[in-house]
Length: 141
Image (cartoon, rainbow, N blue to C red; front, side):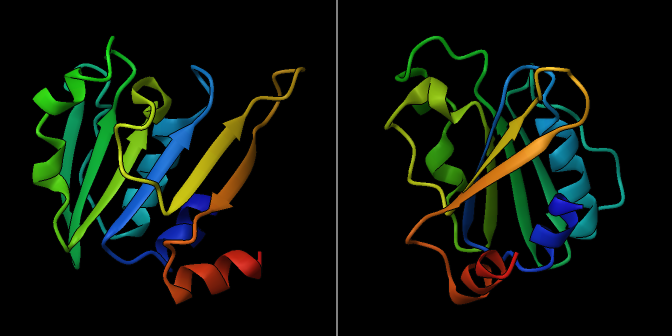
């Protein structure tokens, strides 16, 4: 639900960080988000490839998983700066693995697993970089 609602207001350029423990549902969140943006194919987890790129009707969506990075300087080898174009939505999992090496996210989504393991909760933080449509949506949820 939240991924679909977010997709309705997001506009490139956008940087979204997805945080949460292993198994929290970050990639599942991304798949629903991508589907809501109009992607009809299968969205692979970038756990091993690190980067997957998808074309949706109005932009390109880049999904990055940094879990396997051991050092922040490995980020340069990924060529991340090549993806920071005007019409790109960048969704990054495990951004905390490369502290302070990435641009500041527009939106931080933290998926939490309750202690009983049932369900999920989502905490979101909007940065000062957010555009008016996203800011209005965020203030009204």
